[in-house]
Length: 220
Image 1 (cartoon, helix red, strand yellow):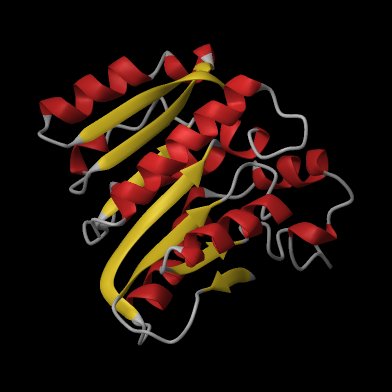
Image 2: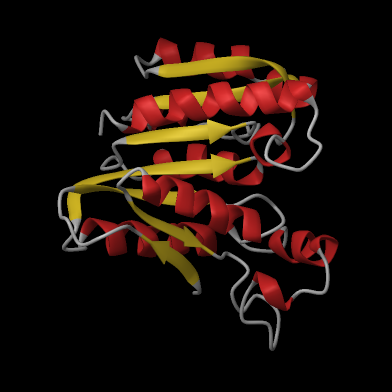
């Protein structure tokens, strides 16, 4: 599996951060975001779940366009995704620069994978889900043991319709789920808010979410 790995310097005692990409694969934006997290002092790995999913294609960059990448991603089996996430987790956990704490951040499709992965890995320290939801048939949410922090855009009704149901299920089981809806943001506001000419709503939502994410990551 191809992964994008980054950190700053050689100081130890860093929290490990797994970043789970959107359904377009390991794009330049995911790599850029990984660098932003590394700038905060963390050890970061972003797996490319599209590695070798198609004959002759080593990574996301090998696909001609995002639609083809998305189509291929939808064909990846659940067991393979978990296997890849486990590999990323153990890479960080066993790294000499890691303090033993590993958190996971996911965007859209990746956020759904974060919910799912956290049900089977009780050693994760936290999950951060951006505009994504657990699978509708996920009956294992109650197995999550670490806090989950949600980041949602105001103008993303399809995803936001799941927040109340998810909150009830998780809070009923004593799981700390803290969703925040960011005013003016649409689906994908973290990416869209960085683009040249981005609308004001996405810019403000991205800024507020980034501030919160930095504060939360500093806890671990």
